[in-house]
Length: 91
Image (cartoon, rainbow, N blue to C red; front, top):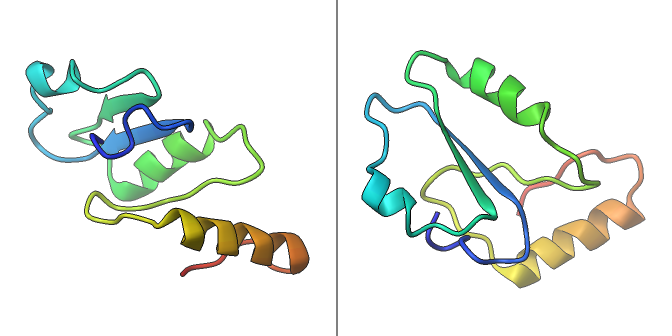
């Protein structure tokens, strides 16, 4: 979350761990990052929660240990814009 904090995009975190993140850490995260803790909600429930919040043409799903290079994201968007029969890509 620290990596994405302050970037010009919206980040929604659906944490399914047993322990909620500490307030001290969360207070360092900027407003573009939303943190939600769902200790008793499985991955499918958390995905449903996230899907209902997408308001943009493109969205990205990643786990807590993934980082994307901006050049990779740009390539993926260009691919999707050119290949209208695709709805997703990985890279």
